[in-house]
Structures are given as structure tokens and as C-alpha cells.
Image (cartoon, rainbow, N blue to C red; front, top):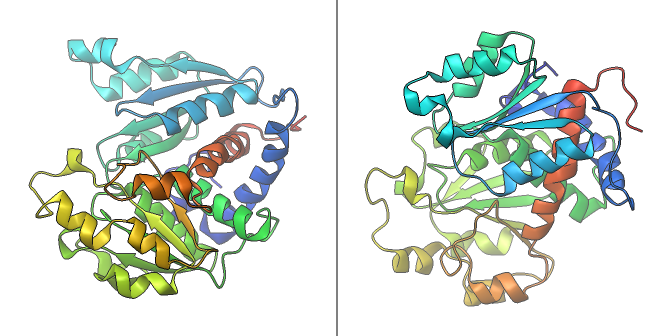
Length: 317
């Protein structure tokens, strides 16, 4: 693993397995009465979120603090960016402060890689989501959550072999879908993309997935129903005729949930549009909805990433 985490493709199967196995260790840390270790004491991690975030931002913050690192919050809305300072100059300024890692979320595809290429080996750059391109730590935590659910933990040879996972909804604008597909395939799962043509990315036929526009035909074959949010904020034009029609064809309604096998699990990276991709009654009442567990696992998985990048030669405890 390099000094940066930009895309999961940079890790390959063994790198993903290593991080997920390390996350097993940090799950144990988070369950202690005092869930904190000194592994990154003296390290400083800067958080640069140019897009709104709840789950990713808070879990990275908590992950860093549970490793005893100092966290430097970058106030994007009150910084010198409002005076015309470029992102490049902003990053160089923060670099000059002596930080050890930059966690970056931005709406421009490829910006974290551009920054990583510019800084060289240090500080470490972690992509917390860039446009519709990639969200590597979400892909890791989604894979970890499924390994934990089906096998109890990731273990040293994390695997999703024999699991059929559906990724359903707005794949066209989803950085999560791209990272999930890579992680799931690397661990041996079969992945089917289910989306209307208008919400499929133009290069989907190049992805290592099966493709369908018919959710009801695919649903009985799935072990995992992975739902995605419709990202209206990234759409330059209306890509679905109406929300009602989308729900009728692709929403996890009560009727659809009723035909699922009891052991089928439902995931969603959040935030959930209740009543659109997932009916409120299904969200609240069906067992094996893993959304809260995904959020919970975001902390140990991101602890694993931070420790792997910054903790060379250091013991966890």
C-alpha cells in the first residue's frame, strides 16, 4: 500500500484483505470501556471537506481521535478560499503547517489524486469521496460489514465468494457504486447492477458486473440488496420521469421486501431518502437492514486506514 489511499484499485485483493483484517482488531478496540489507543499520538490529520458530509466526516474524526491523533478541521466556508485562494495554495499552506495526513472530499473527479501527485510521499492523502469517481473507505466499510454479517469477522483472508450482491439505483452518479463493485469483486462476490438506462454510467459495459433494468426479475437471486440514493444535486437534467415511477420500478417497497428471503440483507451508504429507495416501514421494521452497522463499522475501518498509512513501526496498544 502506498502512502495515499485514492482508489481501491490501488490496493488489489491482498491490500483490501489486509485492511479488513486490521479493522477486526480495531473493532475490538472500539468495544473497550475506554475505546482509545495511543498509536498515532503526535500525528496531525487535516480534514478538508468541500462537500457536505455527516457519516464520513464524523467517523474519520472519531477514528483519528480514538487513535490519539490531533485533528485539524478546515473551515471551507470561512477560509481564504472565499478571497480567491486556489485549492492548490490552500493545500500547500496546510502542508506547511506540518500535518501528517489530508482527508479530502470534493465534487471534482480526480482532485485527491492530483493533490497526492503534487505532495509526493507526505503528507498522506486520503480520498473521502471525489465527485462520482471513488469513495474507497465506503467501499471498504461496506465490504467489511458484509464479511462481518456472513462470517462473523473479516479474518486474514476476507471473502465474499458465493454471495450475489445487487447494487440498485443511481449508479451513474455514485462514487460508492464504483468502489463497492471493485471491493466486492476483489473478494469474490457476484455483482449485478440494476438501474434504468438513464441512471447507468456510459462505461457500465466495461465493469465486471451483470446488468439489468428489471429489479423484480433479479431480486429473488440476491443475497444482498444494496440501495443507492438518487443524487439530484449531481443531475444537470431530469433523468427519471417522476419519483413515483422510480419507486414503482426500483424502490424497496413493502411489497418487494415481503418477497425477499429472511436472510437477505439490505445496505445503503446513506443518507436515505425515506419512501424513495427504501420504504420507511422496511427501514424501521425489517431485520437484516445493515445501515446502522455500516455507520458503526466506518470507525474501525477508517482507524485501520489511518493506522496503516501513518502507524509504520508502531504498536496499536
